[in-house]
Length: 157
Image 1 (spheres, helix red, strand yellow):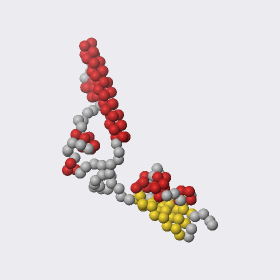
Image 2 (cartoon, one colour):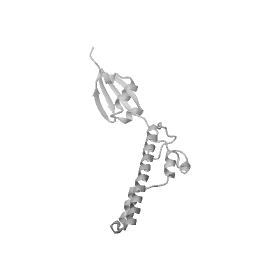
Image 3 (cartoon, rainbow, N blue to C red):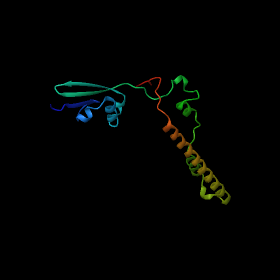
Image 4 (cartoon, rainbow, N blue to C red):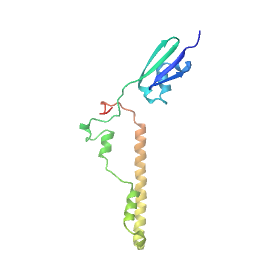
């Protein structure tokens, strides 16, 4: 008895695959395909056998996008997007200091002006460190958060 030939149809391509891959359960096949074809994670798999050839067709299914809220609720507190929209806008303190220093001639400062500038540089560095810690804490929070299915499909998807 000859080995079966396996053909994978995915994203408009036909790929000949080995029996080891073609013989996988659907869930294992999806896991194996996802790194190269991200749409395979949320897909339907159909198998058809004809003349000793197994054709595996991966059909992408529409999924929800993001976990935002409807536009009517976007100004309320709560939720990631609403929280970002309600955040106070801040520019990097080092950029602010650079712009302030660029606007005036720092080479013409007297000794007390230079001391004040040094104090401002120290305060700017401290504020920059705080801002960096806040950004890193936000990134860590995002990394820890679980994915959440959206209750609606955004316009255009």
